[in-house]
Image 1 (cartoon, one colour):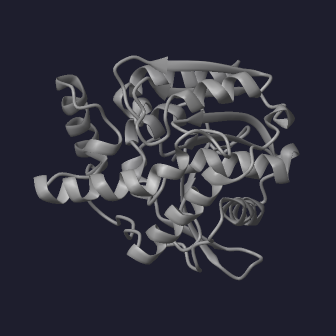
Image 2 (tube, helix red, strand yellow):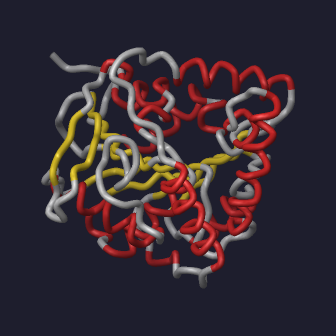
Length: 280
């Protein structure tokens, strides 16, 4: 029986050629080109909006996974975005996949760009949400912003994603609350949260990537869908426009009055656009 509900997906593991064990979940019919989800900073399997995953999985084979050293995946968190991409390739190869579509968000979009630079023939189509190019504007400030909002979240007894992902408008606050409730819908067999050490390592990797020399994005030949909110504080929205101008075969969607988590704030519209893009 095919499972189309992310909250009911089994926690699976596979041992890769590097000796490490990777945790993942899959749903939808196992046919065609699978859509692999690349998660954000500090993200685990339980940080994907089930409405987004379920929406894509209605007509696609979907795979979400924990980065090395995060959640139920074993090993050490790499100290560079490039190495995270290489580890992601190790996981994908362990599954025996020859071609994939990529749906990536935030840090996941950075990893996806590096992955394509290493092995471009693997990826058929690319979705980059809430992310930017290597050396992009303001990316080196992610640590400062995350630390400040983490303190703010502690003082207000709220989840930090309330501030990092959403605007502080009435609608933004409403959408943040609904999103956080959706993340709690899975009641059993939840993933393990990221350790503080692993989180800080990821932050350092993002900072270094943001300060690095720009990549030649004209080498990305895959059809690419770029999505963001118009008020992204984590990876400033200007970076989405920059991606669109530098990736030849790309299209851009900017959601008004939305922040870094624009794809979650507008999950219905995003799923419709993402599915149309993947199927076109």
